[in-house]
Length: 332
Ligand code: UT7
Image 1 (tube, protein in one colour):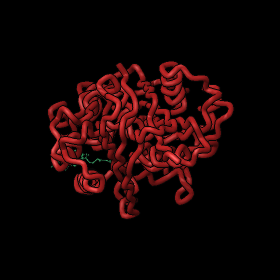
Image 2 (cartoon, protein in one colour):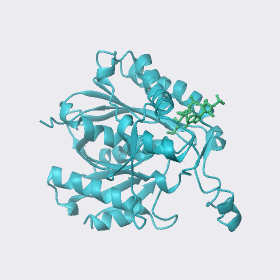
Image 3 (spheres, rainbow, N blue to C red):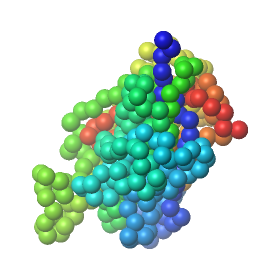
């Protein structure tokens, strides 16, 4: 029997209109465009300003974009995996609401939480369902309203993150295209270095936690950077080695957009020239679960059937990994 692989067959995206530039941030905290650009590669990010809209709003928009582009009936979707670190609410999975809103009435859904690796781990999860032969259309959405958990008085975090959403559709493939290999890792040592202290079962919300600003993201940037640089490059090299891929063979690196210097370290280790590395950190910053699909959306027109792509991410937890995937269609 021919092996079923899980191929990406469509991409959708959404970013809010409001642009938070480095220049605007200069008026909010003690920072400057030169520092932010040199240390991170970020020039601007998008922010969902509407107070009454959560992550689901952007997820729905990205999913609707995909559904329209691929011209499918949402009732054909079998499952919706919602990768996010900023669900609408702690209980009542955001993906379930999103699935209903987009008309995926025959799907089941759940949220997948692994900080900045949520989408990468979601790719692995989606692929297993497709490979089982039981599911034909799996929608994976990555969306985060990072502005809802960022302290805009903390210059070490507010310059980094942005809001956005992206979606991809996985379908069965019998030509050997789609997800080929993956190497996923996690290490609880990261828990102290990138976290939100309060609001969970360990430290429920109280007047004190709010006063202490414990509902915002805390990041020990230097430590996270150190782990990210070496581990991200390691998993990329591992996936290349395991699949006998040379730097010539790899057509694209699709890296999580956390810091341009982390991306450069990975691409250097892989021996890839800049032209083979998807970059949009300058315009969106770190959108957590949305970085990978937003890259695909930006570069979709340049992708060709059979292209070899390496996806890679590193995030809180720590969580990290790389996925090797063969692209399944020509967009143009
Ligand atoms: O996506 C999830 C995983 N997250 C990551 O991968 C992020 C990893 N970390 C990073 O990307 C970087 O560590 C940051 C961008 C967060 C920070 O860059 P850095 O080069 O590690 O800077 P640093 O924290 O070592 O700070 C260097 C200096 C410090 O001043 P002193 O102590 O040298 O006087 C900071 O106080 O830069 C100062 N600084 C700033 N200056 C201007 C920190 N933030 C800012 C700022 N503007 N926004």
